[in-house]
Length: 437
Image (tube, rainbow, N blue to C red; front, side, top):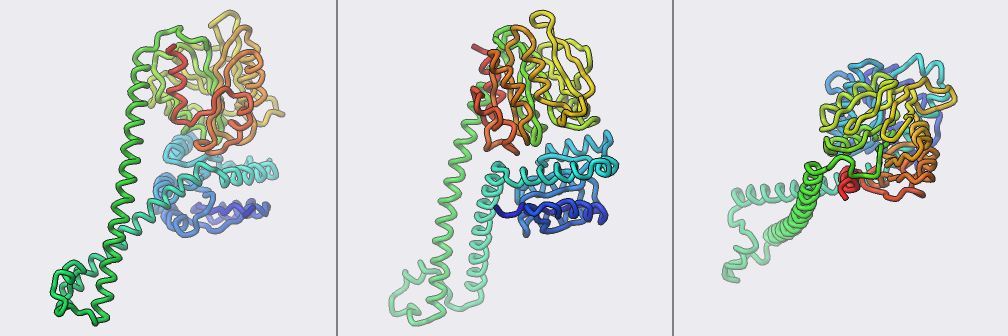
């Protein structure tokens, strides 16, 4: 297996050096370049084609958010953002994730100093996981195919403009069709220059025809895709306007996610109707400060009410509760359809905070509770044990598919007992479909 190629982007020479030192400890990672701002990073991405990019948010000339947007256009690549531990840093990071970045890590120098070995191991593991993402490889192939089409168009335009210049400056210059229409004796059949011109124009015509055919195929594919999306949207819209309360066997929807999760959650939650007849509880691997900003962002984009979960509050249908970063969340039930949240400090031995396993495990202890549990993109196996407990007690488990997962770790861990494995864009519609029976 070849080493994962990494491009480091940060305006701080010190931080670039520290990151390179961390990556150099792993022989499976190769730092292929460094950039001091987003503009340089975009050009280096185009030429070096790294497997993963680490990106600072705030930089001169071009910041990280704008750079991420441009990189996703020209050469889709997993981007790991580095952000300050502030509310403003959280908002900027969430915007970067919404623009296409894969994940983030806090710029926490004190934390790095305290847990250097663990931090280096985690960073390298995350980068290697991102470097093997099938989703980004497929996106890059699509972008490269598009670029090749653009090159073909550019080459055609160059030949056409050259022919126009040649036509205007060379006496007697004619296209192949014009030459064929002239009497045989008047053609310059023995002229090497004319033969070259005929061949050049024939090549242009052939390339134009190939380009036209390719564009027709692309247009047909886009038309078919648009039609399928319109049909799907019509069905989803119909469901959104006709979801009667209490028309499902599920009492809670629980979702677990990690790397790539913020975007995946945004896609799903923004498409769900406000009449969803059960509460939704989410454990997304995220640091403190970030979850509140994330909940506020989702709340603006969703028909549902989205908030950061608070200790002791009762769950309500049509509400989404985001587990606070850095802590653990559990759900308890005293009687049917009466659920309360407990937010607790995390035991030191539990690595993920919040942990999907702890959330799902608490739901499995609620007597008679039927849960729809969905595991989205993420690294590792968090959620596997908790979901297995739910599954064994009659709840249903779904998983996101590999093609649409940034990292297919957590979904793969539950795939063996999941009843459905779905592409991200279909999950919201399937949730609604299970409600309207």
